[in-house]
Image (cartoon, rainbow, N blue to C red; front, side, top):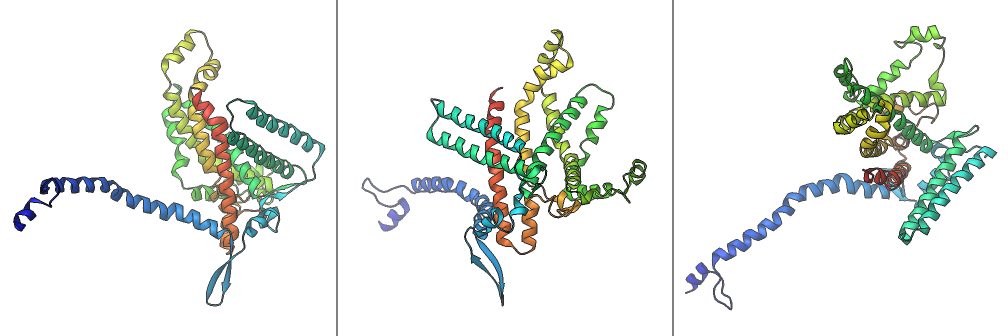
Length: 387
């Protein structure tokens, strides 16, 4: 009887359970757990490469690295690394040198403060606005106003931008030029012009070169004394000019290299957007007598706005991480004039200021998060939802 019970299954109040039923339950349980088993390596890899460094870097930003006999140690210092950037010895390096406010600066600051205040009040008078939404608008206005005040005080005469403002100059000036240049090239190559296939390939060549290679190439091209364009500079009387010793000259060279590197990315995405437009709309505009300019602004431009908003968001997030060009072209110089936040953090890490490097990296993270969320809430959703 025992042998027969083992063969038939375990007993139950309703009688023995068949072995086939137990096998089905076991197979069903294995199927349910299999998805977790297959996802486990990816989850562990994500934790190892993303989440753990993110959390550990928070700890690093709160400590100070010290060499001791036989090794090293981390001494907890709290927010001292952040205070060093804002009010301490790294203040001019990070925030820059603030110029004395002039009447023009006060006027511009007052206008911007009025716009931000109107933005907050507008959110408060809306019937659907909740307390978190109003608080979010107030925080945005406070941070945006502080950044604008910092930009006005450091970019005017007598001021000197730090790595924070320099990074924002790289991003916003670079994206503006890259977008409009990429859109112009995409529009021209989308027309039925001779040689457009050739130029489509030529315009993509910078994407095939590594950022470090582009930086070294521009370092050679920008050498006015022994570079390949030396005869041209001599003819123009610029052979003795040293752009590397002038802060804005060095920044402009870095931005030119960044534009040359990233314009093809804008170009290829916008070209795909232009060529995916419905031809019926363009033909209808031509039948109605619209010119090319009117067709572009009234038909083409609204059609590519959602792509534009996403493209600018991606490029903005990527632009804040610029490091290769200022590092290779100028090594952050003259002084610290061309240092981006990423290069600032790298140089601090290279000098074993691990805590300071982590603090700069988290300041960059906060800045990118604020800019991206602000852009999504104020621009991206409206442009994407308008179509």
